[in-house]
Image 1 (cartoon, rainbow, N blue to C red):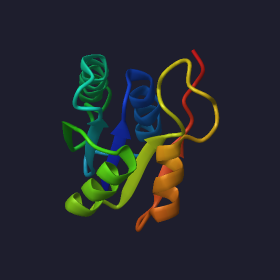
Image 2: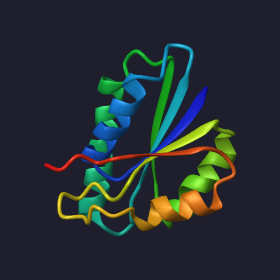
Image 3: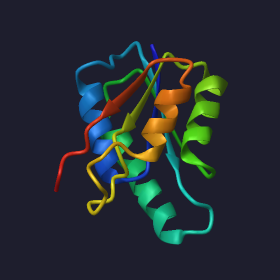
Length: 127
């Protein structure tokens, strides 16, 4: 199985990795993309830190790749899903910012509305 995970923070990545703990195996591939604005150094740093978590948390998964991209998050992840021909997209319910609302975020809503493949939305635990 090939999974695509979209993240913007360490908190979102941790929640996504919790999901993979129960599912991803040594036979699977996980591609994790941090989607961040190109002109925001803080967001770029947060995205890079989020990707650093992946290699540690998903050490038992067969093939793990990470990258940082810029652009509208829902569009960027939909394009990556098509590019990599993934089986499933995994995202957080909302931004990983501790001050974010607990409602379903705009990226999750857009991906769910436009998805051409399964989308799993994982909850982001409160800090």
